[in-house]
Image (cartoon, rainbow over all chains, first blue to last red):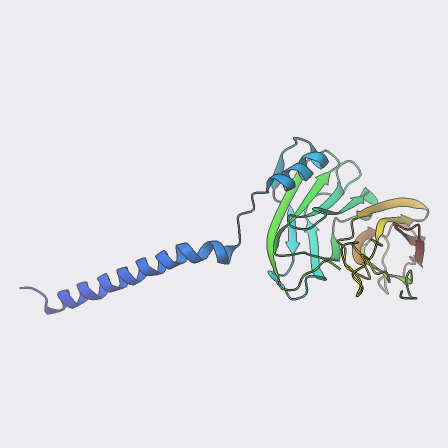
Length: 160
Length: 111
């Protein structure tokens, strides 16, 4: 004998499936906006990276970047950079570089360290012309390059 | 023009243990002008920013920062240092118009 609820259950589950499809449909449209553009650098950014680091491979990892997702005042965007890379006399982070894709100066700042620093941490405030990918590149004394990036939305124009 | 340009501060933790990695904060009063803005008459305001920062510890060079005008006005920077000896830490800021500003603080190990 047929279960009288089966039709209802079927309708309910199919309605859910349709809702889920609709959700993923709108999700597919909206997600690029929510997630921000991909972190693939543009040609101008690639050029800056090539000038600084040549053809060396830049790998993701070992750097954490703490920066707001949305900057209320783009003239002062606070950022905190930390790294778990070693800081010993024969293997240390010799440089941390800040690259902002859509700023007039794409290469925003470079911080050169010696092993005496003890830890590769950095805390500062930057200007952003508009919403952009913010990239941090750490260079070790052995020549390895590590990176991380975050997309930051800005409200006010930051270039004063 | 502001008259406080070049006033700086170097802030150390109040208690420092030998060989501890400490956090140092440095501040400078500086307009950090990009050169891309204009005044009310529409005349471009020339770039005026700190582009070179050197940190020494007991006379020894420990860090060097190279900046564009993308660092915010009244620049602030926090960094680490291993307190390996009792010695002064000095920060020297230089701007693109030849201004040189120095702040210093002594690392002493607390009792």
